Length: 187
Ligand code: ADP
Image 1 (cartoon, rainbow, N blue to C red):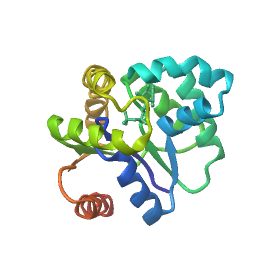
Image 2: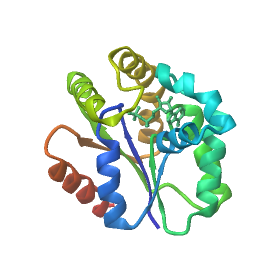
Image 3: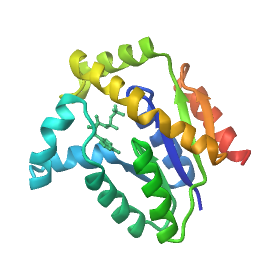
Image 4: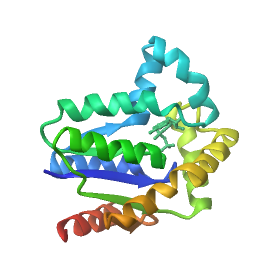
């Protein structure tokens, strides 16, 4: 069973590449961003608490996302594609524990490498159609800052475990997808 983390900066194309991987390997797509946005859209208690944090581009607390992930792993039977999680080293450590608790293990972490000016360009482009309140210039700056300080160290965490696969995320969607699949097939 494949359990893959798709990793990359905001705007790196995780959502797009996730859809293609999920279709190819019949994985369960677990995007913490989507799960959190659903809470906000449904105006749940949790949604009300996290809206301001997400709108500012900061990370919501680990407890909240960890609980969501625990439930998602418990109910999965087909293999998981994690998208947007883990977002810091503490979450990566918890993920290892949760996978072990459920008798599972991570196959690999695929990171999409995209230059920063391209990331900003893509997010501003997406802002025109996404309706996402965090796709604006001020928030994008904070999201990239959060990524560099908190999320980027997660790559080194999996590098140490020999599970980090780096893919060039700058190019055509199909080409990038083919490169990801080729790397997974080689494992
Ligand atoms: P992007 O990859 O473009 O940053 P996401 O949809 O993955 O977009 O995340 C949007 C926002 O949701 C983040 O800025 C953060 O506030 C929150 N979020 C998503 N995943 C996590 C996580 N694992 N831990 C903490 N906050 C998260």
